[in-house]
Length: 411
Image (cartoon, rainbow, N blue to C red; front, top):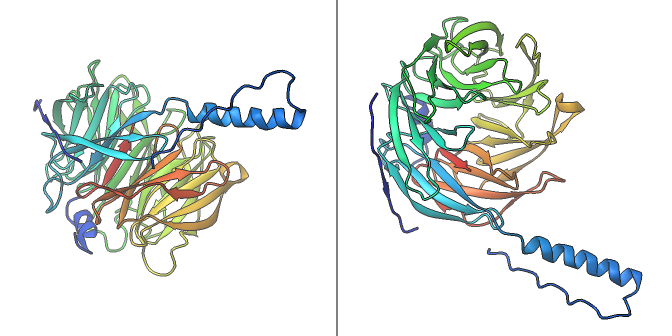
């Protein structure tokens, strides 16, 4: 194992085609509401009493402790203008304001980040020709420690996730079109790779030289692992042997040639999933059978960004399953959808400007009151307030400067 101590630097404030796409275009505090004074007897009329009760409730909400969350930022360390490691920051869950706190060095090209279910460990891909995955022990004091790096067995890993049981790390190698499995020990550190599966069939889509695994996630019920391959226009379904750490393919779903599937997100019901297609500028609602793991794609739908390719990047869904949000890199927007028919239908509502350039990734805060966008070309992170009733998005502050921001992970 390549161990690395890593270091935290304090601060004042994809190889190939993936890198090329990212470089094409160039590089309030909320005031507390005062409590109303209690009235002396005799009591006020019913209408006044109700009004005061509402005011007291609002005052109580304003005085609740505000959560200060941790924010981790992925970047490319080998790209001009990129960062020197994983960016460290905090954010205020009430105001959305981000404050930089430093950088965790010793992690090269950490373009995607994912937490362990325990919240005690963070994992990063090392998106390099010889790919790796790195484990980081998290500390409430901010003294995070790099636990070490393991080889993924492939090139340019761009996505990773932890199996819900917490014992296996799954990663996708974009450059070589393969997916890997690593064991996770009790400390959160990674063991030697237990499996590596290369996507060899069906053949690559038009304009593709081979498979390009872009994402690997576990279904909501934990029974299947799904891998999205942009090069083969395919989503593969596997079963994970949780004792041996081996993947066994059980089915696959083909998209129309040239779709370029990039990112899949499940509806909370576990019966439908939504697929962002990077190359043909569409989203697809997919039916999902939890028993067999079979995914059945529906008809392509508009992203609301007009003509041309807008390189849709990532789609996220609210935990209530009422709204979905899609990042459009070429259009510099977020498409807002209403989810209907218990997850079976997306209804396009509108698009919202992200306030930055090339939104590569989206992430909710744990409360889902905030939505973060990592804007690669403008080297910034935007934060939106999410209206739970309407799904409306409101930019809450000036975007936060972060070098070549390709991933924002709020915890």
